Image (cartoon, rainbow, N blue to C red):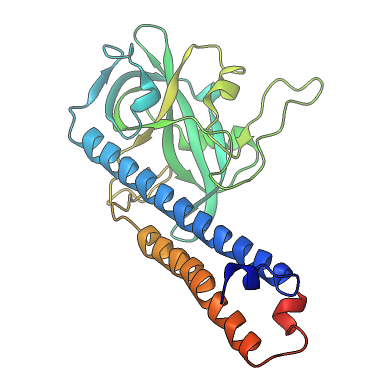
Length: 256
């Protein structure tokens, strides 16, 4: 069988479909390898941050925070509960609720948002005062970067309506947007407090469990490359088989 036979008028449509399918499978395999490299880089970053000493705020507030996610942080100052907001769609032991984000005003006059943890859902922000703690506080946790949408799709938080001065409930810890309604200059990150297994009274601090495995990306990549190879190697045999039998008309595959 020759290339002329595969690309003959009779087989050209099926051939182009097979080539497109193989190219798609190969591209998906490359995408999975890219995801694997991203996963390895994220794991290495987490391990590197975990090994560093905690930053002390406000002393170490002049940092390039872009690469500081998951860095340990200790901060001292006083909470301003009047300007706190809440993150919607948070869970604690399968219970729906919110997370309170409260500005901690540092000694130099700047502030950092502190995720103080889970509370039961209370749409009326005046009810959040039940979860106030001593205003003067020294907190320990990890730095997290601002977010404005979910990793995969999702809608951003709405803009303020006409005459509206603030949003109390947020879907994402969008520090630049929250800055617009807070009177202090906020650092570009927020703190997730270190959890305490004995703390069962809201607000209950939370930090995500980080999976440091490489995930299934490499095996998925090999599967996609295998599918591509099967199409490219198997298709010529398919053509030769049907040509040798002298099939008068294309099969369902050829008609596609």
